[in-house]
Length: 294
Image (spheres, rainbow, N blue to C red):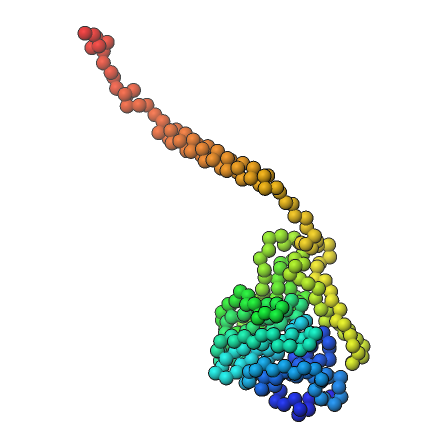
């Protein structure tokens, strides 16, 4: 069997590359990132480029998506740092972002299919999602807050999400006295269609991809579109001309004024009926005819 020897230094975190199947990325306490080819029986480091984050860490967690290595670390003065590293074509540091101070480490949970990262810390009640795009820093998404505070979280496999309800992630949250199910959704109007702009083909990890350890393999992908459901990208969009749109707006405006007029007349008619009755002069006797003579 192979293992990590002393040349790696003080290992603080590691993550397995799901795409290669045999590469492990190792974070050292001094902030250096090295690669370990698990097929190498000697346990020596590979010839690939070693990347330094430039930050000495006390505690850290590392996760891999399809294209990135993401490291959440806790350093001096309890400073939380989020570091993203590009995996392909070569190992290359993209960005290191300070998240502020905290007493506990923010644990990263990765959506490997969409390059989405969720950060959550023990003793807090918030989850911070990020999207990793290109060479820039991770883009913060809407923060999710759900008291009480969490003791631990577990990200469920993508197969547990209801794509027709536009669910992006499901978590189990452990609190002091309960286990809660958290569901992340995106609001969409036409839910009768499959939102293929949000759901790329997912890595199928439900069964072994090779029969023998050490073989180079490609993880198969599978479509998340349910059978018989039409993707939203294939739905024809009916576009109207600007002149037609203008006529529609004028017609709507005309109808609105007509409706207001009818409502006013109807209200007046109801009030007249309510006050209907003999006039005061109709109740008087009047005067005799001779009183009108000269």
